[in-house]
Image (tube, rainbow, N blue to C red; front, top):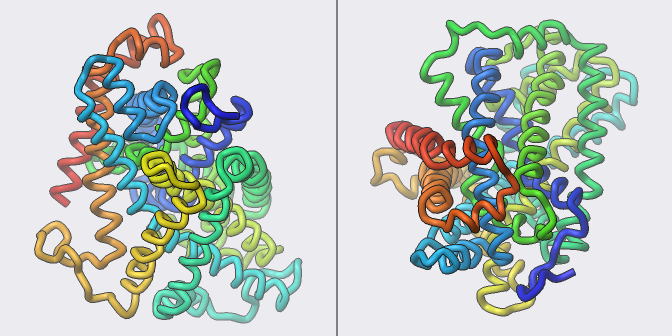
Length: 466
């Protein structure tokens, strides 16, 4: 159903909007980055401060982005422009929407590379399942160093890396090209429930077969001596990135929300669900890792190297490993769909072209950057595109895209969003959209005006300082 006067489709229901927005937020940032960050930053101290940051920073910015989209009922730059015009402010503020759209495009191009890694491990566990059967541990008879070497082996195969990346991107494009109701919403309504079912099953499996007690103690024992400035900064950054803020996705999805949707309440549900998934990711991964006697501080290799080794010692290891990576694939896909939708919505609305054509144009551009990102692990490993800038002097193409978006576009976009919503946009228009009243409204406005910009500025400065 189209939104009145906008040509925009709407979500069929509030629950569809929530599932889609949760799917946008819940991705590799929860499944891969959160356990790695928690493992490297002291466990419980990091987790506690992370939850604190979600409430004080993530949620206020999330609500700000969604209400801009719902008010504008259009792509992100146009939604900002409409709110600015209705507030008698400069339409030049649309730049913050444009920055988000561009950031989403850049992130999509290397995000699909990591999505390809997930697809590769699905294939690995499917093959292993046929060899070992349902009940045995994964990779029977193989040396742990051999299992650990699967990821470096993938990195060394440029052709396979490119193929997996393009395959994951093609699946993402398929759903976005189908539109909101029959494509994006379908992914949310069907894949997100499947994701949560698999997630709960694997968490329960880890509780009974892994070292669940140590995992709980690790994640929820708060040793405040470990709450250093470095740990706090990591928690702030994780809370911000986990909710997919600063990349126009929430503005775009907010534009499809019906007028009777309470955005304050809905944003709270999204933030709680996203944080809950991050917590469950720790409770699903760490019991298995601890039971195998592996380190929690393995960093980014925790999911792709430590976990496959841990599955070797577990009953039904091949089956659970396969289910785990299918679950991660679902999470990655719902986020990549959001990343592609933001620039696609802009292109097809701005240039009045069919959605299919816009999807092919944006996806084609992402494919080019994705190929370069894939090759940066092998054939182009010594190509440093921004090597003349000290901050990016030794970063390959993949890491450069990651660094530019994470250290510049996302925090700057979020800071501008806070300034625009907190200080520039008409107060009555904002109050009509946010769904809050009383103390909650006053608290949210204070956070958006003062606390969030200050915290995001710290993220920006520390990121630039390396």
